[in-house]
Length: 244
Image (cartoon, rainbow, N blue to C red; front, side, top):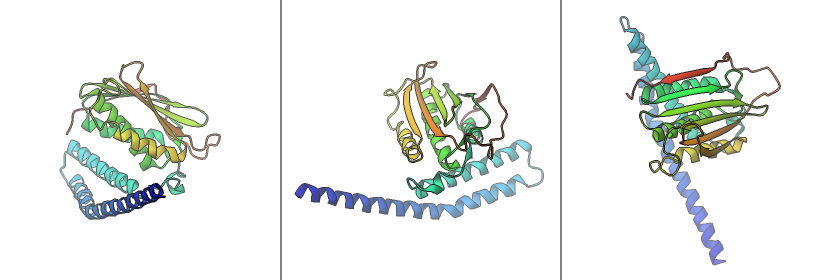
């Protein structure tokens, strides 16, 4: 009885702490919502002002996109609930999300990020913001392991029921990377499990570093009501221009 009471007490304390943490996080998000909106408004004013050079206009547009991704990702973390249909029912274009993630890493990483494999018609049964968080977590882990001049290869494969994303890096492999590098992988695995997805880790056969595989449930396999709008391509290579 004593052990049971102690365990129950620990669960109550954990629940109270979780509620307090969530409350503080929501408060923090509420406080930064207005400044984020102001950044978006200012960037739009600057972007549309007469005489703004094309490259500056492009950078301001990218700034606005990244600010919105930050806001969406933060609110997604706070609002996520395991098994919530709202988080799992909307089909999402995996190609579009990958392009968004690649564009972000082009701005912040000086290594070589390459994509190959299936392209077009890749529709996943996962909320877009959640999928983007998962891809960012895994690719961020890979780029940090590979280092500023390293290589990361993203390979996409499609089966009848799943879309698999293989992320290989040229780093030293698991167990020989900076502490904290696995946090994003744990968060990603937790986000995928409720919707029938999975995350596995192993060795990258080509680079000698780590391989992380995301298995995503395909949406609408067998019907053509929703199709991603990208044509096939052999390989897309994106080389970052350096961190800002």
